[in-house]
Image (cartoon, rainbow, N blue to C red; front, side):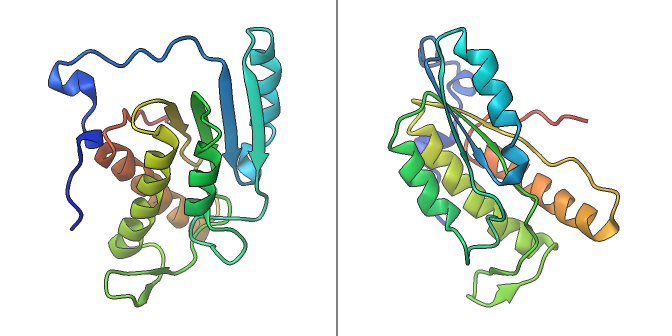
Length: 175
């Protein structure tokens, strides 16, 4: 089990002041096709306030679908551009098997899969946060009507919640 680092604690939980992030000047909106048209709406609305928005959707990709794109590596690359805030909306293409603790693939959507997914999400959150220098807004998935897709969305949303809590990020569920 990896050690818990200081980044796992929100300053407010320890009675410490929040870091001063200053006014928002740069925003990254990324994810799969779910991030569109949100990226365009945010870019348009925030331009008047002087916020430079980078729109970086990757259609057809997923965190559990790494044959097209490694989201962990991409998050590190995107974070190097030092956006002050990152909005992530991804999940339309999830549900693929992930390596479990023993290296064997685990199928979606039991606890073993959710744990592996949460680990990947937390790694990305940590990269985007850059030690508290950036805000991270990770959107959960709406629950689809299709039963199989609904099970995937539930597992993804639960993993996002666990990853956010483990990373010391505030988590708010939208009903």
